[in-house]
Image (cartoon, rainbow, N blue to C red; front, side, top):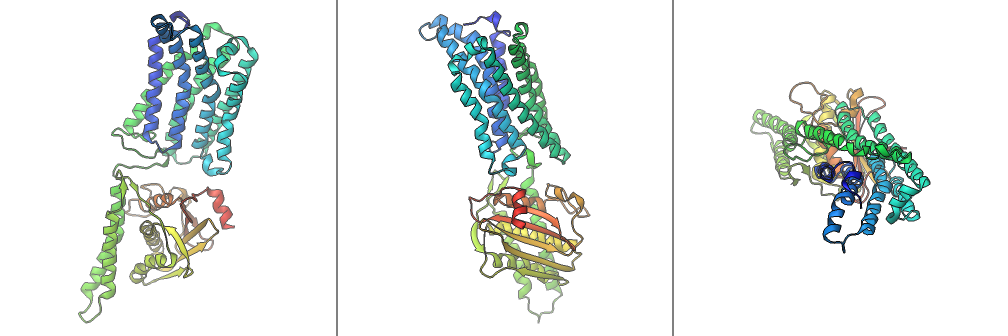
Length: 484
């Protein structure tokens, strides 16, 4: 076993280094345990941290154990553990960094069929090397076999470079500046300590530069700086799912969960209250002899809708609950349109749907999505024109609903309209939460919402629904294939 003079930093500093790494990566993981990026960032960090842990164990803790309990710990046992812990970051840390890059670049959406195989293959070389070069003898190969270390160097540099390319390609494709800044911070947090460790160990040991053998330990300073940056971002605006008061949110979708549910409810109430107000005015103007049934029906439906929405099941007041079932598509579409048809008499409403068509969805959520889309279309047409709601059965996996209008169409910034607080409407009464709600509701269904301009005039919004719970959506390329 080693002594304190051969290990560089004292054992206490190495232990502090290890604990600092663990706290940082654990905080990221707990920020959003459902996020695959957070999860693999945590795994990657823990694998890299093993390299620090082994130094503390071999040079500080094991000698103390050997002194007090020689039957438990001796040189052979200590060297075997040291070799195994050395092999862990050698073989598996950079593949974990690579997989983090895959999720960072949304490869699971872009290449859904190929993605699971890429993940498996990423670890295959490490497994093969751990068999060819037994992990219990890693220290021997490290010191005595230059060919082994050359192989390890090329392997880690190649895999780390591929992972880095994935990070930077995702950054290059991100056009929303706010999200891009957050993703850049994630890339720095993941890549800087990883590359510092790689470049401070592999070249130095490959070329046997003994004086610089422990330069990698200065990574402690880098980690402490990154921890300070992480804390700053957590306090300032939230980072990777953590905010000052531990308000969990999805950092890579620009969600603002502080007051988010309240804003969504307020937006929904605005739509329904406008109809109630309109009906009330009509009732007050009618003579006693006229039938009030049509208007009172609208009032009752609207107030019932408000009541249902206020009792929607939520998870920690942030996430809507989706409970899909197989229902009549025609009934869903006609119910969504009929109140608007009564209110906007200068708009021609068309419902195109086979009478026997079924759709697998949560009727409450989808009804509200359709209300939002229809209201937006009516306003875009200045309350006159043609609006079509159509059901289409694409194939055995997906069905869709299209809402198209004869309005002015969508501007060039249509890719941003689903972000919260982005509104294309004029005036201060529009919060930009309607389409954001629609996107959230469709994601809960495992589906998608897409906005396009019609070839002739107006805009069209397409809602894609998987036909059962197991059929999640598979990416934009699939949309193009289904539309052919």
